[in-house]
Length: 101
Image (cartoon, rainbow, N blue to C red):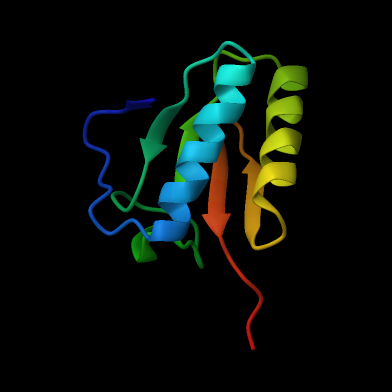
C-alpha cells in the first residue's frame, strides 16, 4: 500500500486500520496497489469523519468506472454495514460509521 506524501494517519482508529488492510487486499485481488490519498489532514465535507480518524480516501483516478464499482462492491461486502464506501469523482471514501444508539 502506498501513502500519498502529506497524508496524516496519526489519529487513525483501529477500525480504520482494519479497513485499510481489507481495502489493500481487495485492490491486490485486482492486481492493483492501493494508495491512501487522505487521512485527517485537509478540508473535507461537512460531517466528515476524517478528523476523528474514522475515514480514509483511496485513489481511483486511473481506473475505469466499472472497475471502481467492482472494487467498491467487494470492499462493502468485506467490511459490512458498520462502514460506508462512497465512490467520489477521483477516490473511494471509506469510513467507519456505526449506527448511533
